[in-house]
Length: 122
Length: 127
Image (cartoon, rainbow over all chains, first blue to last red; front, side, top):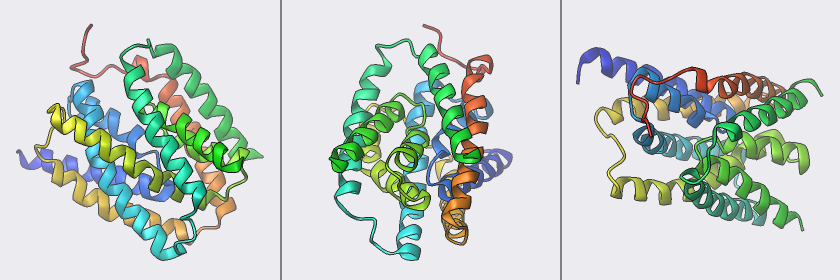
């Protein structure tokens, strides 16, 4: 691999990692356009590779959080959320092929805007 | 009842994550706004609850040979270091302030998401 490309990968990884660790999420939404637009990944490869990048970051960040804040977050609520996320993830992956998601993306963007405004200003 | 809400909101986040629309950015505000979970706790729940889903999804993606591994470590290793750094930095910021910073982050992401179809990748798949 070219030296420049290794450097770009490293810089992109650092940015995505910091965002995901600092905010507890959001890295996936950053790494996808990075992979497709900067590194010319095809969509399917980008989605798959994004998880391969975000998963170790998530594990590392989660361990940091637990060391800093203790293990109190492990309760039935967390377990319940994890079960929900896993089931939802499978459903979402299956739906991806069946739904024209262009409108959904816009709706989701509006929902994010409202949620963001609520958290920032209220 | 509260456990069911956590499961439901987790599922909502998971569906959107499974569709590639960023599940964590939904789950965190759902937990903070509707279940009054503290921001940093919501972030931890999002991080940890993502792991089992990601392991399953990644296993399937490797099986289907969709993961491009060339140079991946050059991204993952710095990402993990800075991920830990970000998590440590978050620890020193009050949850109330983190919530507002996260709100600003969501606002910025919403614009990127809304206009994402106007930014085309060079090798987008045509169906």
